Amino acid sequence: MHILVVEDEFLLARSLSEEIRRFGDKVIGPFADVQEAMHHIDSAHAAILDVKLGDQTSFPIADALTDNNTPFLFLAGYGRHNIPSRFDRNSVYAKPGPAQPLLRELHSRYHKQVPGLDEVQDIVLDMLAYARLKAPDKQSAERLVELAMMTAIQQIEDGKVVPDTRKFLEYLLEQEARAFEARYLQ
Image 1: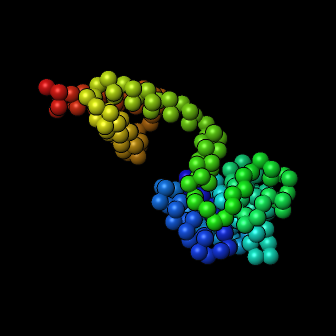
Image 2: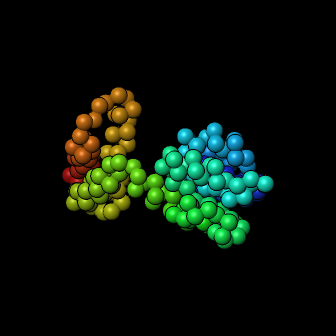
Image 3: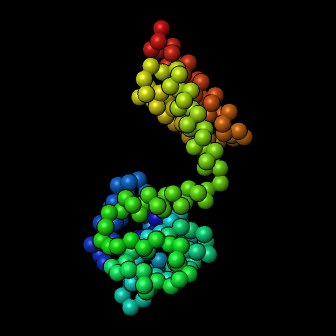
């Protein structure tokens, strides 16, 4: 995910950004200024907002994110008592703190909004179940699914049109399973 980070404490912003990258997400920012951050809202899949930015608050950013239906949460050095009630649905995390719980929540909220994601997860789980029937161990099964997914990504990047994702991925998995059996199980 692309995560907008709005934090005016340099060391905290740097630490948070490094943790986000370590977990595999891309950081937009960090920004210490409301106006700067506002220019990048449309690029964000989710956001982490420090409530207080100098003599300003991040509430205009939060309003814009709400309008875009982009999940976000707040960081605060104090409780939620200074946060307007219109943001009651948004979590407030104490700072400083680890990024993992923040990212877990943002990923969960973002994935609930992505159409078809549940279907993709179901397909991958089905692929794993099938691969476990074909492969001798869990790691081999996971490798088969990984190879099928890598092949799919390459073909899509090369311009292949995929009208039925499930059938396409099942076909690629079957091809990988046959190649696996030919190499290792004969």
